[in-house]
Image 1 (cartoon, rainbow, N blue to C red):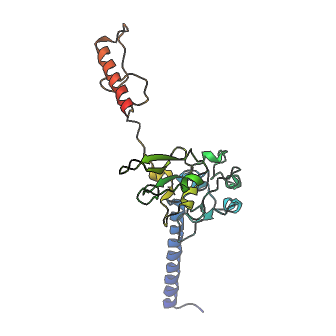
Image 2 (image 1 turned 45 degrees about the vertical axis):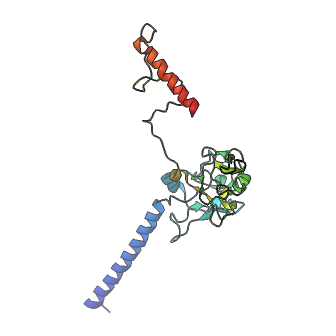
Image 3 (image 1 turned 60 degrees about the vertical axis):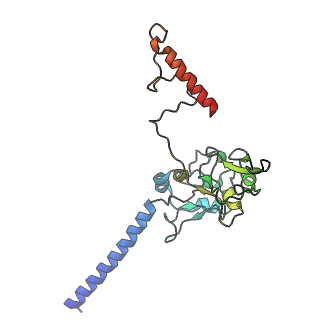
Length: 259
């Protein structure tokens, strides 16, 4: 039977509505897949941002091959970039496997195969909240220091005397950004109710000085009045600026010694 005019327009409206809903869902999926959650801690060797998302095919091989079941796949509606691998250090950290099973399992290079030493991994960097860290509150706690796979390298202890008595020493953990791999062992083991030390992607917590700044410390060259490398006089005497440059350099050395 041929549909009536009313039935035709009703069916057309239903199809249009279904298409609009499907299009919205598809758009949200594409948008979510194209944007990385900035706070996600990725597995060892994960490439940066869009490069990682372009290569990751969401196969789950790295998750399956992780012997400690630390990795999980992001889920639609709860985490961004659904299907991509990440881990939550507080729940299960990266155990720094020397044979890098997750990297070897990746078929597309989203986890960079050039990573050969787990100590060179850059999953993030740990940050200490001194307001809630037991050690900074005056209690003896070295948990994050003791569990660190790179003890005395990524995390060290600093001793400070107590001002009122002058005798009691604070034993304070210090994270060295350039050595921290972001494995999350410290966050996982922290005894406070909410971890006082947390791992976040490095780009969220570290700044960048910029190439337009010239740092004098460690610079072996002379310093001129306009902070440019000194230009020697053709006769080698340094001209009339020689003594001034010597004084400036001497002042810079004294400043370095004081610091």
